[in-house]
Picture 1 (spheres, rainbow, N blue to C red):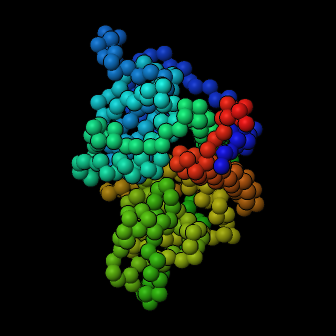
Picture 2 (cartoon, rainbow, N blue to C red; picture 1 turned 90 degrees about the vertical axis):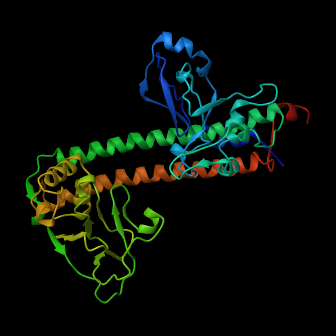
Picture 3 (cartoon, rainbow, N blue to C red; picture 1 turned 135 degrees about the vertical axis):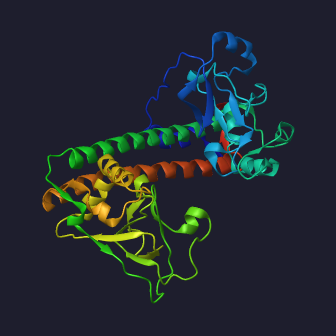
Length: 394
């Protein structure tokens, strides 16, 4: 049945504000990222060269589609990805790995088309056209235009595009807020931990290495440590399990303990186990625990995420032959060590800030899920949007 456009839009209107576009005055060549154009490092050309390339000049609200890229679902670099050219990027020059799509205005609303080209159905269609090797693939334009989709009247296309734009704005505003809160969180860590006039100790003063082995083969959950996701299952990271068939020499790590790869700690691969009660790690890893009588675990974890900690660890790695950091090397690193009560207070403040960021991430994902559901209903005709003329005619 029909759903009122006004009724659906009011669900999010109260959360939205004005989001002005930044203004750029120079012609540049950009590349597509996510749903916009990357313009933080533009490549400039002279006006004379640009004049000879006027046929490649982009207009406001053009749809740009990549014809060369990676296989789906690697969206940032995916072949067949589409973006809409924002007003500040008008005048940019298209590169050879993209095409511009401009719909017939008598039949097609441009924003409706771009929404259609972001559906799972279109991605599935692109996958049938892919040519090339595993790293870089391409699609042929003559095949691209065989994609078919439902085409409601222009007024309904406009209403659908407007409705989905409401969700896009909510997602964009939430993501901008997340980035702002992340920057403030980094400032808080620096201000409260590294920037405070705290006495300093050494990591060895509050930690002990753990060398328990899986000798009884009682644990078969193999874990890895990454620099951005912490502890993960190898099959989630590499799409397959990467481990020896004999786990008896693997190191056991339990909830609350820390671990790192000595050869990768210099890029941030150190973490605390929070997601599982227990697991095993390759023998190359270093596992250690903290003395909670002297150090608050959250405080220490936040310090490890700080610029100060990462810089000190990198310097420690540079002093070794293979840029590795042994547990002895790690223990020699100094770090802020205020009284335990003060550590707990700082950790509480940072926990609250981090929980708010997590809440915003869940909110953004909820908006994305709502939008996917709306797209499924509206673009397949399961739900029809009653537009103003239909309301007037009863």
